[in-house]
Length: 408
Image 1: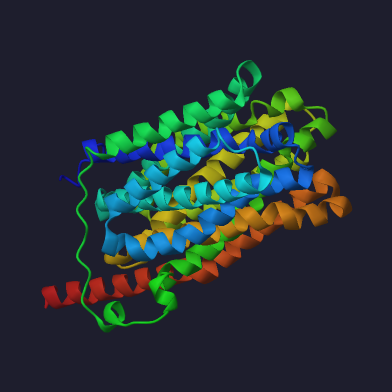
Image 2: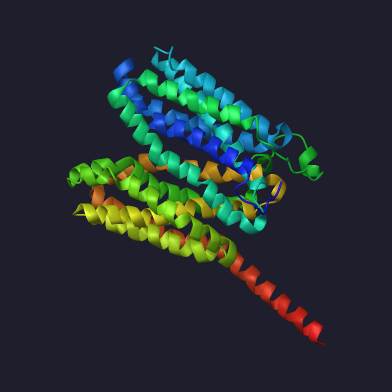
């Protein structure tokens, strides 16, 4: 396997498999509340639970996937997740009881957590360390494409077809991922034999990669902020009478990421993470301010450009930092830790911000979130950038000393 060549057969397979996994997620997330209310007479709160309990399954699955992915095998965990996803999606056809729906939705979340953690861990082994920023940046485009295509497909099929058709399409995606995974070759890195790997009992470090925690805390805050857009954008657009423009918001958002990704990934690798992270956080905050002050469609879509450039770049860059900060053989745990804390931010955001909304209104809410993102710049400096700066200074000092020795 040539790690210096990015778009290899194996990289493309993992990219497509991850695309299928996230397409299934986004297809269902936009229709599930309506499905529960229409087909099972669920109340609004029960429908919301049916949609969100999926994330609970993901949260529980991630640390276990991170722990066992090394011993069980990357590819086997991916197979298990995909097979489980096929089974739980098939069950949607037969469920006519709300409690069974909630249980199956939770199990589907577990399947998603296993499969998504596996693909994100596998891809790390396919990318050389000097191209990690660019490689992960290109890989996460599969998430971006899914976030644009999935909701569109879900709404289109629900309008012109039925829910059974949506479930069938999701099964096709899951089976497609399962089939092409058979052609994937994965080399599992060896695990150093230490006391920590052989000790028995519960140890937090068996489920969490502590070196990935600092940047993952930043990610949790970033995702908390972004959840305000996913949750309240359409309601805000109706309030300011810009629904037509808002329908193109995520299209502009996705295009911004697609256009910028080749540059930001290269800059991450050549100029360092701080060179990319600071402008990205600033762009995200500026986009939120523009969103809060939108009085016409142009401003709303311009906000989508800045948020896409900011949040989209932050997604890939922070994941690359989490992997870079951790031992290579613990890449699975680093990946699961990264997504675990990120998911916590995404899940808690809508709930907590819902309490704030009556006091701030939509415009005030987005101003508040913009301030929070500005504050995350300082948090990033304290938790990660400061260490990078010190390490770079020490490296320059050592290089200077070595050059002087050579001259002498």
